[in-house]
Length: 148
Image 1 (cartoon, one colour):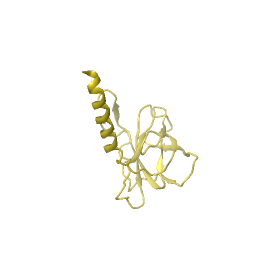
Image 2 (cartoon, helix red, strand yellow):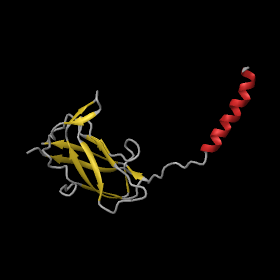
Image 3 (cartoon, one colour):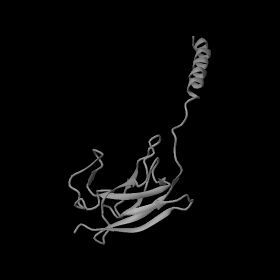
Image 4 (cartoon, one colour):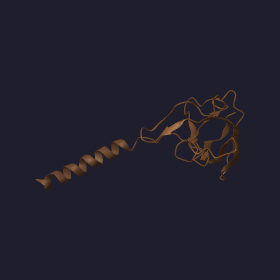
């Protein structure tokens, strides 16, 4: 009985593959790696600070992107758009920073902002990065945040 099912299985597998071969991968833009380090009151944060990137130009209505990342405990970060650390598409960005409690067990990020909402509004943030086509990563250096 297995001998008769094998050809049927092979034919049905080819049919499924041929039907799905016409599906295109999602549109992705070229990205440039962006790295840096965040300090808070001159110290490493010791926790994860959320970074969001807001494109200062017009939003791509057809293929919008969302970019950002989290710092490591030592404050270092690499920004991401499609995959971890891939960077940002070409453009000018305003960065926001929010420092809450990251609960790895529940995968939640909540509680009060330890930065007291000083850096959470893209309209007020003065931290910016300009991304131009390049193969070399953009190093933003040390971004000094304050709680007071």
